[in-house]
Length: 316
Image (cartoon, rainbow, N blue to C red; front, top):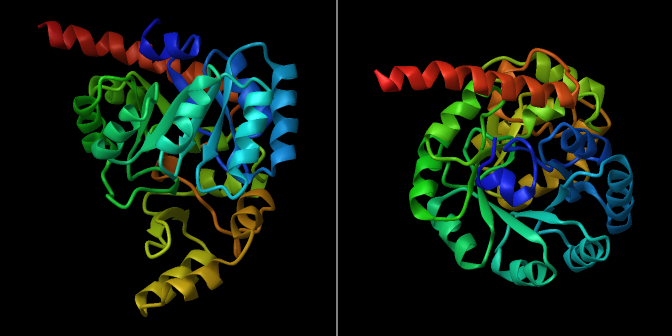
């Protein structure tokens, strides 16, 4: 398949693996890229020199395009961006911040820039800043969410109508059927995070992966809205957060409860009680830990199969 996304990234399939904290290291990114999709390193959980190491290992493991996801609220952002340029990373996805600040800098270096948005207004701002594409991430997504709480089925067509640059759909996508639905709504490709957490190549802890596989509908909830909204798997830590929010805890109290390295404790170290377990609603549909290449193959094959089933109906 050739479309706006495959041409933009020079990949085979319009599928992107999200750059997630504590999950998206070089093993996952290179495996996804080798399978014909686009793998991303998650810089949000990496110190600058750790990112450099992962970029170099990813280059050694694949000769295909890959990128880096950079949350713009990162304290060492300039050092990260300098490393990305020095190491000649071809693609950067930015999130959690104003795309105006770094898009021009990256574009001047010949880097393709994509920004993650949660509304059509933010999509327009990203396009005006010079981004090559946007990721329209719906409320179903894991990790940090937009305050608008707009679901993917509303967000995707709204963003498609708002901008002329390519649109990548994210949030609640783990299957080929869901990919087809996103494309029918106007997306040019999809980004998947939760599905790729449950792969052997993801650097997240096995206990976390097994908890995702065991989860059912309703096991994820949005929390910490007074700080930055984040979707979490229901565990002892989430219950503490919920109790604090119900009694009207202040922003400062919630920050103290969150503390430091809470996400690392849960997702990377496997402490399922005290850790912050960021994951999407689509976890309820994931029933196994599957190699990344097989995930890409299964999603693509189902997309093609369902597409063949869909279009004849439209022709009648």
